[in-house]
Structure formats: structure tokens, C-alpha cells
Amino acid sequence: MRGTFRLSSELQLEADAVIIGSGAGGASVADVLTASGLSVVMLEEGKHVPSSSASPVASEAFAAAWRSGGLTAAFGQPPIAYAEGRCVGGGTEINSAIAQRADNYLIDQWRKVYKIENFTPDELTQYYQRAVATVNASLTPGPVGRATDILRQGGDVLGWEVSELKRGQRGCKGANRCAFVCPSGAKQSMAVTLLPKAIDRGMRLFAQTRVAKIRLVNGRATEVIARSWDVAGQGRSIRVKAGMVFVCAGAIHTPAILRRSGLRERIGNTLRVHPTIKATALFDEPVDAHRSRLPLTAVTEFMPEQRIGGSVFTPALFGLSLAGDWINRGDLMQHWRFCGSYYGMIRPRGVGAVRPLPGINEPLVRFTLAPEDWIALGQILTRLGQVMFAAGARKVFPNIFGHEGWTSPDQVHEFWDNPLPKRQTNLMTVHLFSSCPPGEHRDVCAVDSYGRVRGVENLFVADGSLIPEAPGVNPQMTIMALAFRVAEAALSHSVKERAQSAATDRR
Ligand SMILES: Cc1cc2nc3c(=O)[nH]c(=O)nc-3n(C[C@H](O)[C@H](O)[C@H](O)COP(=O)(O)OP(=O)(O)OC[C@H]3O[C@@H](n4cnc5c(N)ncnc54)[C@H](O)[C@@H]3O)c2cc1C
Image 1 (tube, rainbow, N blue to C red):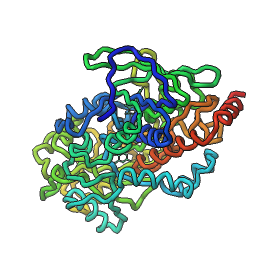
Image 2: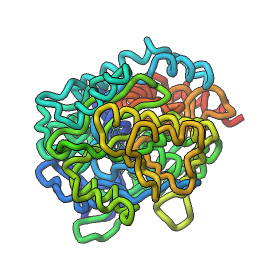
Image 3: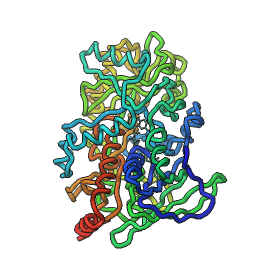
Image 4: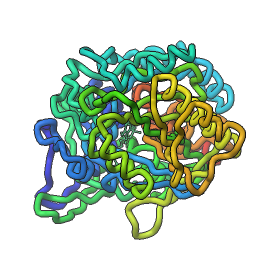
């Protein structure tokens, strides 16, 4: 990417603004700030992985673009495996680019509960429109493939609403490698859309540069302290002084950076995710899910509380998904062309927490499911089984360690009334948010209605951390909308106004 810098010496920089993290939130902030003529420095921990060097090999792609090669988990019973992007463009480089808006009912509810100013669905519309236009959210061209038809067919038989999913794409070629960084550049990720634009306007982006903390003096963020790695793997320090600091490191790392900088009140206490349970369905006819794009429909009948959809499927990813229970599931590998991988996700009531650990880069993440969440997971798994059998599945294997699989629709009710086995249930998520909720409800809100960290005049949060609660839909559009809003508000409030407000916070 033009303008991506590598360091050759220790560096001290100055700019109007510094942005930490180049994902959905950071890139959106960069777009607003550079359009208004500010000088901007962006610091990104991961590498730049251009389309031309995107590897089709799962292990290489994970090592290049996923945090910890994809091996990250929130502690709890059971642990929940989670995934984050760590590369220029963040999660938008490895996601499926499904573009959805949060339900108006939820936006209204968040405004009331968290007392967020100017946060009606109408007021957010302009920001959502900007996000939608940026990524060209649209229906994917070309044949949808059998893996998609399965969800449509099953939903139709049961009379459930099934919706086509818009994605941020322009001329998707159907390579089915969304999770490995799009090889054609058709996915409208941040490295394809907003970051090159911001760089053309003069933004300096430093990849492989990890922020340790932010220095705070008398209610101002004065300096961002980071470490950068050069091509030879040598680390050097980098310090950036800026008038405004935007923390956009995602819902896990933003609270970790803030807490490491000495800001602890209400920060990182309310992490939310979409707990997700998967199932493998075996059919009599080939599905050949690897040949088509990911399933482009979702069962939306039970949204926003529950949703059923389909996962990216490649032989390697399928093998990995079976690996955790190889003794019981390994046989499925030989039938991989006849299998599809589907999921059910819920909007949880449980919460988690993020805490940095001394001397270790990765923070400790915990998530505790509420009793209602277990009921919801049992329901969505039952519904997932129902829709698979309605579409003609011969056997359905819920992702529960040691489970023998269901051979008929009668068996899927097993977990409707009975709890799922906590220790054996495998849960995962790719959606993380709410660790720094905004608003004027001071008991719970880490930042004000416009993303400014309480008590600090020039420090803002603009990423998934800001979504007040789990949205029940794919979050990227909401993250971008909220980040555009934070950046605009930061520019429109004068330094004097912000300083007064920060001083009031500190009293
Ligand atoms: C496999 C997968 C599939 C998904 N599918 C969809 C989908 O279809 N639709 C959708 O809407 N959402 C999807 N998501 C979720 C979506 O991609 C994320 O919610 C979104 O990217 C989060 O935006 P963010 O700005 O909060 O953080 P990120 O996009 O994660 O960006 C944060 C950036 O900050 C960097 N960073 C972290 N710590 C530091 C530090 N200390 N110093 C410097 N940089 C740092 C990270 O490396 C990262 O690049 C998916 C996610 C994954 C992983």
C-alpha cells in the first residue's frame, strides 16, 4: 500500500491526531480527519497483507492476518474461542463483509438505557449511509451455490424468514477466501477503501507498530508510546505527540491500552460477544461448499435475539473444525464434499471483562454466559438442527464434544428443555463489542455520548468497544457508523468545550 512506512531509526513524531488501529473504526476516523485537512499518524500492530500476497494456505493466512494465528479464547465455562484480525485493515481483511444495520428498536433502547445524546435511529442514518456507500454493500453477483440454497430451502419448508445478505464487495469473484484476505481485492475492506484514500491525503501509517500506552498529563493525552519492528525483526521505540488521540484497537485491545495507561473506571468491564454454536450437516448429494461463496442467506426469523447462518468452508477449515473432536468426527473428513458448516448465534445477557497482564502483550479476557444464554443456545441449536433436516440433511453433528450426531429431526429437541452440557459445548465468536460503552449514565459508561474518555479532553474511543450491547447483527457497519460520528463530533467540539467537560468529569 502506498504510504506504508517501515522504520529505520528511533522516531518522535508530531501530528494533529494519532489513530491507534487501522480496522473498521480506525479507518473510518482517518477518513473524517484527513478529509478535513488534519495531519494524521496511524499506528497498526499487524502487517500489511496486500491482495497480491494473500496466501491460499490456511496456516499461512492465519499467521499473517489473524491475531495469535487464530488461537484466542475468552476464559469461562466453557471458554469461548474468539477471532480478531491483526493486520492493516484489521478484522475487515479477514471477515465475510456481511453488511447489516442494527435494529432501530435496539438503538432506541441503548439511547434510553445508556442516556446517549443525539442517538436516535434517524440521527445515525447518515453515518450508516456513509458506511454502506464506503463498502458498496450490495448483493453478491453470480450463482449463490448449494450451501446457500440449503438455508433457503430449509427455511422455506419451515415457513421461517430467510434473508439474502448484502456484502461489502465490488465484483466478488467467489474465491471463497474471505477469511484469508481477499485475493482479488473485490472485498471492500479498509485496506482497499478508506486507508489508501487517507494515505493519499497525507496520513502516515506505520504497520507492525504496537502501542504500549498513552501518556496522560493533567487531563490530556500528551503522547502515544509504541514499539515498531523493522524488516530485520528489530524493535525500536516510537513516540507520537498529537492534539487528539483515537483508540481504535478493537473491543479487546482498546480497553487494554486504556487500562495500561492508568484509565480504569468502567473500562473493559462490559465486554459482549455473540456466542455462536456450530453444526456440521451431512447430505446425500454433494454440497461442494468450497466451490461457492459462503452461504449468502441467513435465517432471520428470530432476529435480533437469534440468527442462523453459514460459515466459510474450505477443506482445510473443515478439517480444523473437526480436529477438536477428531476421534468422534474425523470420519466426516472423507465425506467433506457432502458437508456444510452452519451456525446459530445469540444476543447474550452475560458479560465479560478485559484486563491487561503485566509483561504480557495479550490481555486476559473472561466471558460468563448468563443462565438465559444457555437456554437461548439450546433453542438456536435445536432450530439449526430443524432447518438442516428440513433441507434434506442425513445427519447433523452439533459442535458438542463426543456427541454422536442426530439422524432424524425428532432428535434435535434434545436441548430445547434440557441444558447443553457446559463442559462439552464448543462455542466461538467473531463479534466483539461493548467494552467501553458510550453515554451519560456515569455508573456504566466508560466514555461520553461522543466517544470521549471521561476526564480526558482529547482522548477518544472509536471501534467495536462503543456498541453499547450485542447488536444481534454483523457489527462492521455499526462500528463504522459510530466511528464516523465520534470523529465528526471531535472536530465540531472546541478544545475549550472539551476541556471544560473533562474538568467536570474529574470533579
Ligand atoms: C472471521 C471473521 C468474520 C467476520 N465477519 C463479519 C461480517 O461478515 N460482517 C461484519 O460486519 N463483521 C464481521 N466480523 C467482525 C468485524 O470484522 C469486526 O467487528 C470489526 O472489524 C471490528 O472493528 P474494530 O475497529 O473494532 O477492530 P478491528 O477491525 O479488529 O481493528 C483493530 C485493529 O487494531 C490493531 N491493534 C490492536 N491492538 C493494537 C495496539 N496495541 N497497537 C496498535 N494496533 C493495535 C489490530 O491489529 C487491528 O488491526 C468478522 C470478524 C472475523 C474475525
